[in-house]
Length: 613
Ligand code: SPV
Ligand code: MN
Image 1 (tube, rainbow, N blue to C red):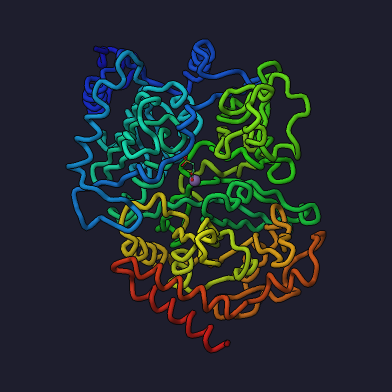
Image 2 (image 1 turned 90 degrees about the vertical axis):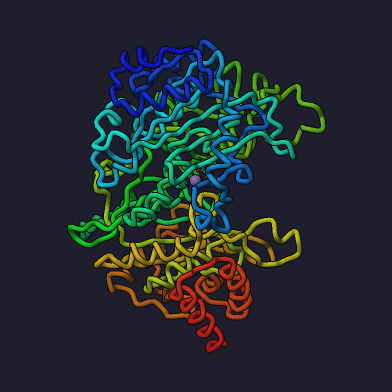
């Protein structure tokens, strides 16, 4: 049995509540040793990980790891939000009673860390001194060294964050036990994994994975699920799966900030790391704040909505990251950045990494190359010859400080004032390039009806989206009706209102399938229009679904787009929208207690479409 008090004492961790918490879980999990981790332990942990073969060198100051083959992504089916109040059950939060889940998790975790070290990771999901700091502190216990290394990159990690808490008991208890990955029946009816946030006890219990959001508990379990619940329970803030960027107009000196949500695989990280297109770079600069999470609150000093990125790093999808799609990301994972790569392809001889889309074709000389499972490319069986070298959910993990265009004020504890909130999915038709919404309820309604094309088409329902309200579907922790009401309340209490917009970079030509809009850095253009609209410098054209740019209002200097394609992405297909409204109605009807304001917005848009018909 580990000597908890000695280990915590050596680390200078005096918080008595932490001691009690660590003692309980050390005993239950049977961990052999306790080690308290601070950011200064990184080099030592890297050395130990290399010595043990858990990580491999990937060139200068970069590292590589492979996960267990059946442990490569978040598991939504096995993720549960538990509380003591059945009224907390929503459509998407997979609610279960806390009284049922806690014993279940304790049973699985009992003795499951025997012989292992339990790393105690004190962390803060906010810049230090943030007004939301009391919701940001946590202590993750993990029995996996690679998870501790990821936490050091993704959260602010150190003993002082926890020892200095005004309310010494106000930290989230986040327990991660890997389990015997080969024996958990992942994806079978006997699946042993459970990823549970007991939201009203501010306790996170994750068992059965060492990958991503399943294991780095500061990120989505705390930063999104727990924080969204805390934001609602306190009435103080919103926690959303949003990117956050700044745009500076160097001519006027004005700075703007935009945050927004995009379902997975809709280009959120690329947008967050965007650089201005060449022809506009003399005048505009885009600054990066965050690519995945924003916490929003009203600043009582000026009545504006302020946002912070609670994270300390980027856990980005490697696939399709290249000089064309995201040069900023490549610079962020350059040599000497301390980047950890997971489940990409790796070359034993050269220590290089590669993933699909990194270059147009894989390395021609396959010697030394292994795919993400560890199989030599030269020895893959014939039937696997066409399989990807990297897993589609392979990742890079790097700190914000490595992002070349990180905003100079990204560490400002009060956050930055938000001018616009955008939502965007992946829609091959119907959704124009951008449509602005000035009414709060209509903006929230738009977020609630956000969706991306999914596999539904295969089931024969053409045009039906997989709805992903505010891009929070996998992270919802309380009922959707209350969620909408909380949005109306928080944003509605701001003295100056942000403008909303829906964007879509993915319209395609129905005949040949080509993308109508060039995307990537050109996405700055519609955002500049949105800011000009908000400033009263552009008027746009009112449509039933929002204001869209007049043809001559988009700055297209240096852009390549045909007049026909531009015409399509700046117009509204009324019959197609009327079809969508029926799906939306069914989607919204699932949610009990949806505020009347949201229904009124829905009916207003539907009536305006009918009038335009
Ligand atoms: C996501 O899936 O939206 C992520 C990655 O940001 S993970 O942290 O694994 O959830
Ligand atoms: Mn995410």
